[in-house]
Amino acid sequence: MSRVDGSTGGQPSAATKLAQARFFLDLAQDENQHRAGRANAFAVEAYLAAFLSMAQAAFYHLQHAAGEATFTAVYDEWRGGLSATDQALITGLATRGCRTSTRRVPR
Image 1 (cartoon, rainbow, N blue to C red):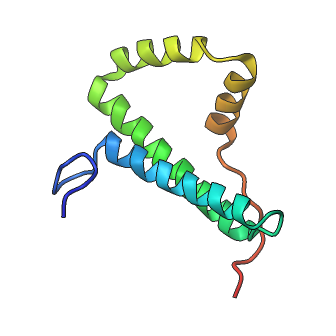
Image 2: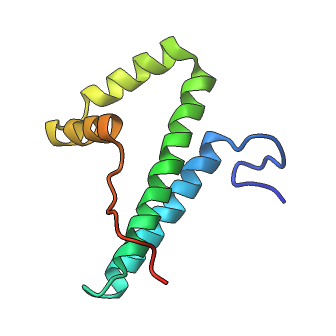
Image 3: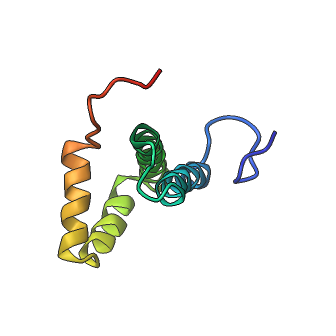
């Protein structure tokens, strides 16, 4: 079975991880939108947690593939182009991670 990036074995590429991140973000958005205020909060949180995990994996893949110096230069340039609000969001995600509720899994 081939992956999004066309590979068939070994570690998934950053493109595969980004595609997986998009998949889980789409599931979270669908769950939230289609139920018009009656969304299953646990499902939305689970999809968002999966999205963040895949996005983080893509980040690490890119960092490793590009090398630390190149990655840092590109990342710093990208961060510099973000609004203050988006920079604060990225900083919060990087320093605190994704906070989810402590509710039990529904049975």
